[in-house]
Length: 108
Image (cartoon, rainbow, N blue to C red; front, side, top):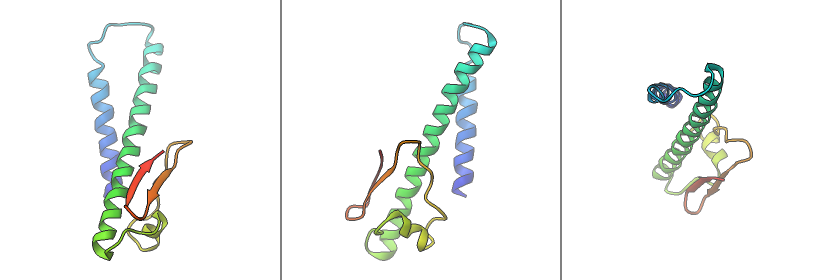
């Protein structure tokens, strides 16, 4: 279900970005404009998906704590105990930073 929500969020964002771009002053060839818009749109979609994944993991960490009285020892423990299917991918060159004592999760 969360994957469906992520995909729908990405589609809605994509449509919004395309609509928001309408009415802008015409600059460059169609090919140049398409390339610029595509790159910006792709980056925004990737950012949205990674933010959604971070929120999803934070939610699962908190669910684990409510059910077990403590934070999981690692993100892998969420997988091992069936809270998530797999740890979502991170952007190239980044990684999740998780503190099991506080439950704090960041992407660095």
